[in-house]
Image 1: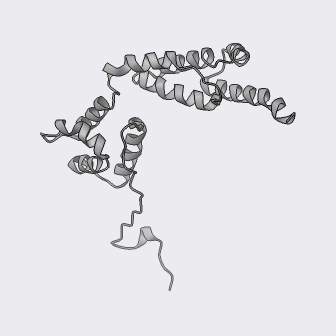
Image 2: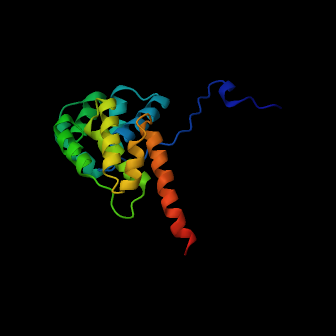
Image 3: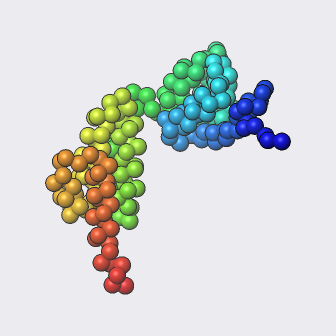
Length: 185
């Protein structure tokens, strides 16, 4: 006999989803919340259940950091705001991230891509409500803090490039600079 596809089996709702990993203090909260919300939407977790599932996925240090706010029942948006505040992602800590973004320089041995990724995270935290300002700050700090004047000067020539195109060009230029060194060994 022919077996019908799962979605046509009467009375069967087979959802096989991997639960998000435990949230650990210091992880990117925005990224984790996107992953969690995708999981919760797919699993149709609503209301108080969403709060309880998220709380169960916090590691001990994260839970201890927010427990004083949990004396009264909280909604999911309230819990997210508490997590953001305790993780240092609220408006009060923007100045810290802005100063870290401005001060961050590429260190010896760090790849251009790794440097860009670090700056991207700092720009996102520095300007969470304004993507255009974050993109401009990322561009400016990426070009001027590369600690490679040859690559920086080439990047400054391309005003029409967006940040991803600049990154691609910088990676290519870095590879070109390193290529002669590796062939003469």
